[in-house]
Image (cartoon, rainbow, N blue to C red; front, side, top):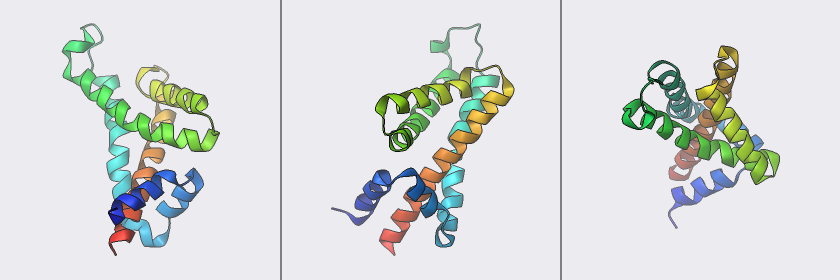
Length: 141
């Protein structure tokens, strides 16, 4: 098996605390910065498009913006679900966490709640992506 594929599997198998430690090691700073840029862009874009670009008076299935939001939710939800499974040791709690957090991001009209969900999702996606990049880089060194 390819080394980088094996290490990505290790990253996915690592616990939440271990992923945070890996992402914030001084030797992984560059991977973490890139991880936050890549992983954090998705929830930020999803938030902005959901709150400012979708015309809720028109059918959603006719709007490219709605497809973009759906893509962002799908991207983020997979990472958040895997973190939730590790953190809560329960698939149902993980699913509830995903629905609640991603839903608050795109549906809530309470600004502070949407922004709080956005911060959580940027952190989770940024750390997970940074950790994956750091482990992938380490395997190639």
